[in-house]
Image 1 (cartoon, rainbow, N blue to C red):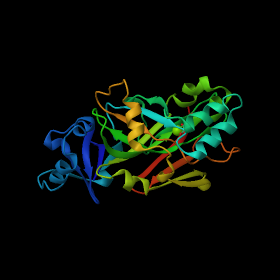
Image 2 (cartoon, protein in one colour):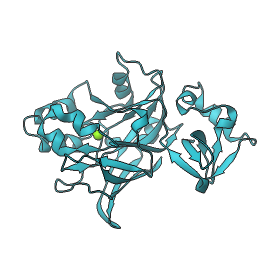
Image 3 (cartoon, protein in one colour):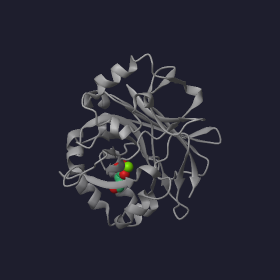
Image 4 (cartoon, rainbow, N blue to C red):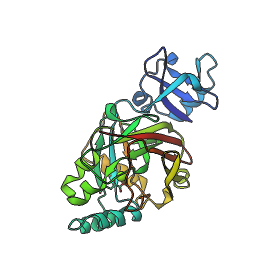
Length: 285
Ligand code: DO4
Ligand code: MG
């Protein structure tokens, strides 16, 4: 089952169930917030029943614009969950290298705040690269969708845009490397009903296009994530409540070569095999 937020030319934001050829408009059932829907007990059963409700309005896919599939959830991220990320972080920094080495093997993961929901960029809109950075990359990541009880109720795709020169200069600059205008994209949909075993079989593919040419292509498997999904969620919810749930980006396992940096107008295409495609172009912010 795929959930989304969308709008039409005539409407504000709505919650929908994405079918092959159309979106079922769940607002006709009084469902107007995706974060509230994700709180339902027996979510899959409820969605299956809604999918069979013939009276629900359908909107053709070419008549809607997809919004990011979150409304009130904070976005957090976990870092250094793939060996590839640990190596890249150690290479880009000098005196902070041991911190990355240690956190990769530590019980406690690296967790950091990434974005407020209203700052998240949906598929089709521009992500940002900072004007004061000269080494910028996308980080294509599986994202957990968590309700307020800390239940992993779905999966989506996240792009943890990052300025590698800023994070490499000094670990204390990490918030500036990670949090700025348009630094986080999430979407296009939330997949409900997949297990950790299903998700670990998925592939993540990153393609970057410049003037119509592919300038970087890389892939990884979700199964390369070193930590158990439940452990990541447990640490995020330790001593912290999320009244509207949260989105957790789970780290990157794809890092372009060191000579590569994003440029304005590049197109970033992130595909996760069980979810779909998150596509954004790049602008200076
Ligand atoms: O420690 C820096 C951030 C790492 C990160 O964002 C990742 O591994 O995806
Ligand atoms: Mg990341």
